[in-house]
Every structure is written in structure tokens, then in C-alpha cells.
Image (cartoon, rainbow, N blue to C red; front, side, top):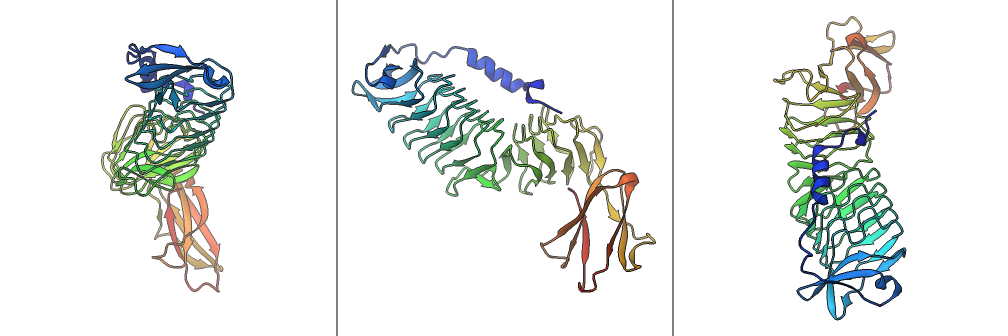
Length: 383
């Protein structure tokens, strides 16, 4: 089995190094502690051009209310690492004066459960809520424009999130390692992003940006997609198979990294270009169709196999004998297939009958004839 910490992606290591570098933007500020309520007295502040930045929290209170003004000046920013690692923090009230939540502002606040972002906030910066493992609800409101790199990465309990129409930028790795995330929904009036079945895309669905890590089973990428972004399927522990359309020409770094249940990756066209470490799997196999060119094995470090099942027209068992409808399916040995039936050849309702592998390259399929059914059609698809 594959585990995230077996190999930390290079880009994440670079981000860790970058975070270790001191920022200079607070050098001209001055700090003081203000005596107000108990929780507020444990907040530290800085001034800049007539506005207040929250710079730290020295207390142990579970619930904190950030004031809208301090000494008559508006509180406009929650600064870099202001609440970093405050494991006792369970809730925070952010005033409608704040316009920016800084880098790592609430990172590693493991008990923080619910956050409402007021309409005044325009930017949630890089890693602002990273590793908030207890976070179960985030309300993003109209007015928000920027969601920084990794802003909600590692929020392992977050089940879903809605992107408001005002958002114009979503950074990479925003939902990385959100193990419980089952849906990413985008408001229909958003001009930059869209969602389908809980998956995040650009507005025209040319780029697949993020797949919810808690979704399992099989997934077919829409035929409009040309690019799969870095980390888009990273850590999708329940994903069993994925079908990639012929329109996809580029799969970026770490896109399918650390998907331990992924067994089949089915390509409908020619091989796309690959970034670094696209696949990390002990179990996955690449399957490609007849007629596609440029395939070789291995591909991206995985075994690549021709997926070519067909009903054998020369089979002696083809047709109805002994009150059985029977046919043989032949193809490359040990490829996975699903046999389906439907009442209408051009219909949309197909019922799976059997999901098997072609052991030794052949499957003998048979079903009792149903006299009450005037016609039946069969087809073969990938899992």
C-alpha cells in the first residue's frame, strides 16, 4: 500500500522551506496588548497605515471573538501565523472589517470546527487553514476573491465546500489531503470555475482542478477536459478506476499520486504528456485502446496493456442453445471488463451483468433466455 509520507512531493518541500523564510511586511509595525475582554486581552496587534492587524494569540480560550476596532482603528487583517497551532481553539468570530486572512493564520488549529468567513474578506492566503483536522464546516461568502495555495489542505474532516461566485483565483493544493471531502460545489454565477458531480473545473471544463478525495468507485473524466492539474487526484484513497478521454493531452505533476485503491487507468486516446511522479501505485495498470498510437510499456512507471475485448464471431457458442443465450468474449489476457445488457441499443439504461477479468484472454458468457423479453442487447465496457 502507498502512504503519503513515504515520499513527500518536491513542491511541498519547497513550500515548507519558503514558509521558513521570514516575511518583512510587518517590520514597520509596532506591537501592544490591549486590555478589553478576557479573550481579546490575549490577542496581540500591530498598526499599519491606520489599520489593525491581529498578530498573535497568547491565551488558551476555546472561543475567541476578534473585535472590529481597536482604539478606534479598524481590524482589517488576521496576520501570518496569528493563531498557528492553537489546539484549544474551537471557534472564532471574524468581524466584517477583516479583508485578508494571512498565511498560516489558523494552520494546525486541530480543534477548530466551524468558520464563517464574512463578506468583507477578499483573500484567504496560502495555508491559512491548513491541517485544521477538526474543521467540519466552512462558509465562504460573496466578496471572497482569492483562495491561496493549500488554504484548506489537510482539513481531514471537511465533508464539502461551496465556492461563491466572486472567487477569481483558487490555488493549487487547496484541498490536498482533505480525506472526508465528498463534494466541491461552485455557484453557477462564477465566471472562472465550475463543478460537475462535486469535481472542480475551470469554467469551460477544459481543466480538471480537484477531485474530492472521499469519492470512491469509478470515475469517467468529461470529454471536454484537455488538462489535468497538479495534485488533482492526490490522495484519493477510495478511487478504484478512472477513464481518461482522448481530449486529455497533459497530466501534470503528482496528479494521481498516492491513490492506493486505484487499479485501472483507462485511456481512450493517444498517450498524453506527463509531469513528474504523476502515478504512485502498487496496484494500478494502464489500459489503452486499439488504434491509438504512441503507447509503450511502462508508461509513467506503470504497466501499459492493450484493452481490446470483443465478442468472438467465430465462437461455436454464439447464439441460443439449450435455452441459453451464450457468447465468448476474447482479448488481451487478464484485462478487466464489464458485461452489460439493455433493451434498446441506443438507450441510456444499461444493466451490469458481470464484472470479471479475461482469464487467459477468454470469457464464456451465458444467460437463460427470457421469453418475456422481446429483445436484449449486450455490450462490453471498462470498469
